[in-house]
Image 1 (cartoon, rainbow, N blue to C red):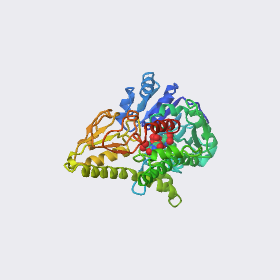
Image 2: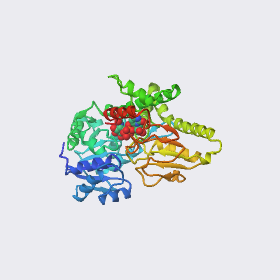
Image 3: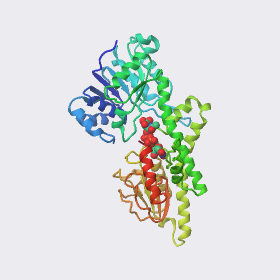
Image 4: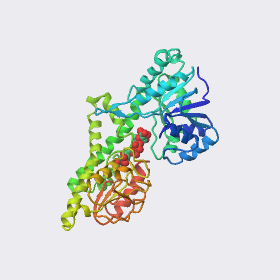
Length: 439
Ligand code: SAJ
């Protein structure tokens, strides 16, 4: 039984759920968002947002004022349920934590009706959609589910992983292709019809949820492994006295080479997490993925060591000074350029560890925040000006505001290549980056 989609319920109103809910609502579909956080629910019902994502505020405000979007703490009946809750890992073995998916499944089970579709959007380890289907079936023995009834099921179930880039979510939600892994063919077709309400990209139907789960994990692991290659090159180049930014520009002139950019480490809530979901499913078969995680996770330590050695060099050259007299300037705290998101940020980790270690004054230049986190309370926030007097300059995030800024005087630790090379090389790098990276 397939019924028309009149009402969509989105469970989890975070970085993925809220933009997705707003997108359906902008297409004049009734959307009810469900979240466990009362403050989030209130904020959205006022037409405001609790996260930063370009253009999201306008779409939410319009959708709420026109009556297409509202938020609630308690699930209610709908035609389609989209689950967009966190899937972190737990413990030293990085085991995936499916407790949020389990809780969301148990929360919606009582309101499910024949003809509904339930779609898992959260990035998940292989097998999570089947686990979700079982939690739902256990809670609703009166309904038929696809793992037992196939196409005769009352409820359709699919995995459709979110794949949007923070900072470009409202655009990529529409234009990106969607991978859809239904538990049956009809589950996939129902999910595809739902996304086609706003997606202009292709809805690509996978053989099932396991392939769709693995596809998403593979995309982020691909990026992690490639960034690790760039980060490893940066260490090798430092040892050999070669400018890694120049090296990458040169090597990328080959038609089949496209090396990504080194940095202070890999941050965010996806790329540093998702590879572990593959590793936990096949630990003995994933040495490359594990090694890449190791390379990227150790990069902050390497940057800190560079700062420590720059401080040593500065003190040798200035024997009248002690560490207390040495001024350090840190450029950028967010996990990647041009956003305010500090969660899982290697730049923030480096700044915090330097702040705890350094006896002298520290400035932080971060145009995207108004106040420093408590962990940096002894540092001074300096807005967006790069005209900072300091003895050691540590470039961590290549925000737009920093690019093209003059190389300051003093010791330089440039983890992003902002002050790298000659002006000609710099503008060439910029051209190549805008062609190839993060687009
Ligand atoms: N980074 C580098 N060098 C690079 C590119 C990125 O060091 O050349 C760093 C960034 O600075 C950042 C981290 O990697 O710290 C991750 O940034 P990102 O822009 O690569 O990715 P995310 O985490 O913002 O979003 C990723 C995207 N995945 C892919 O591009 C394959 C996005 O499409 C996913 O939807 C998202 O993960 C997710 O939610 O899974």
